[in-house]
Image 1 (tube, rainbow, N blue to C red):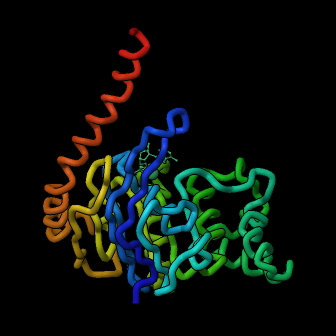
Image 2 (tube, helix red, strand yellow):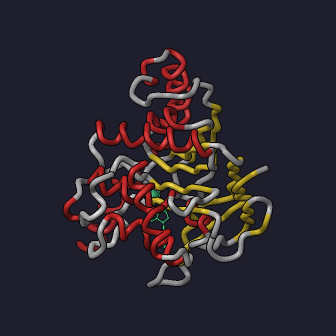
Amino acid sequence: MNALELQDITVTFRSKDDPGQRYTAVADTTLRVGAGEFVSVVGPTGCGKSTLLNIGAGLLQASSGQVRVFGEPLTGINRRAGYMFQAEALMPWRSALANVMVGLQYRGVPEADARDQARSWLARVGLSGFEDRYPHQLSGGMRKRTALAQVLALDPDIILMDEPFSALDIQTRQLMENEVLALWAAKRKAVLFITHDLDEAIAMSDRVVVLSAGPATHPIGEFGIDLPRPRDVAEVRNQPRFVQLHADIWAVLRDEVLKGYAQQLKKPVLSSVEGAA
Ligand SMILES: Nc1ncnc2c1ncn2[C@@H]1O[C@H](COP(=O)(O)OP(=O)(O)O)[C@@H](O)[C@H]1O
Ligand SMILES: [Mg+2]
């Protein structure tokens, strides 16, 4: 059973200034995440990773193609999914506890229950004793833990993560990655994890999907990650099998990263030429 299935997805954006001008970000993309499976999607910056995640979340509607959630066509927001984005999503005027409680309260969980559940989730992500702190009183890593507790407290069947740890320093990041793996192993939710970091993708996942550079991004490679679990994301990198997988996937990803980079360099140059003319 697939928890999430994107089938033949194409996403075309229209320019706001000139509606005749279109940009096809994603083309004919099929992507499946099995129930309990941890799938990472890697690709160069700007290729369309977040676009795909937003399609799976039901936040964005595809120009063509179908999304299925546990076999059912998705219409509107994907209620069986929880999201964790790159940007900070905590409410600065609410304590850590109140931030974790908010989704539960929105679902109609009574105040006292919501408080207990939120407290227990904060404990599970290592934040016992920090319940009353406000986001500005927490470190970047602690804010990410709070955001993680916020998502997990809702017990979603599918977890969508868009470069959630890219702003963290490497040690904090590896700690968080290990914690996510431990929590995932305990509950075995379907995870769609977006990253531009190949090491992170291999260390975390059952399967890694490589996207081409845009426009018209689509998968160009798919690799099963047969490294034993449980894994320590820092240590697994030294295993010969990891090194081999990294070389195999990088061989596919490398050219796309170079293409993506070249496109980014082109953009500002073009606009400055227009400005000079
Ligand atoms: N709402 C939008 N309107 C127009 N173009 C967009 C919109 N969202 C994304 N894009 C474009 O689609 C491409 C893919 O974006 P995105 O999915 O954010 O890339 P990634 O997450 O891989 O860095 C980019 O070229 C971006 O500029
Ligand atoms: Mg993105």
